[in-house]
Image (cartoon, rainbow, N blue to C red; front, side, top):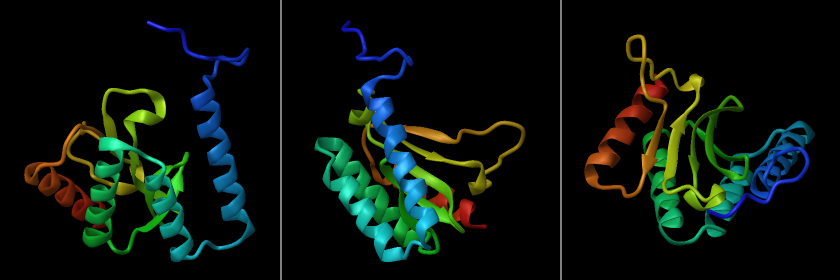
Length: 146
């Protein structure tokens, strides 16, 4: 297995790029209230840069989120598609190719309040989206809107 390309800080180049992307996003949010159209464009641009199954999955996730939870505003978060309420990220997509992972991830932050007892999953590995997975994601999005 090849060693990761890291600098003296211990961060890989992909991790540094993600941190730089997040810093740019924070700076943009401070300059002005982002309009929904700006968020849509940022998400579309992020998805456009993806390839293969990452791109297909991200596009479908975007469709599911915008249909099921239109009150969530699209934006990017660490350079990846995310969806927020009142500026706080509720859910996000992370492409497998971003960090060389073997699967993409769809996750929820604590603002989603998808609580279920004393322990519940907040991130899901995605290899494909069948109707069963889409139904589960839709249900979680509806729960997160409550």
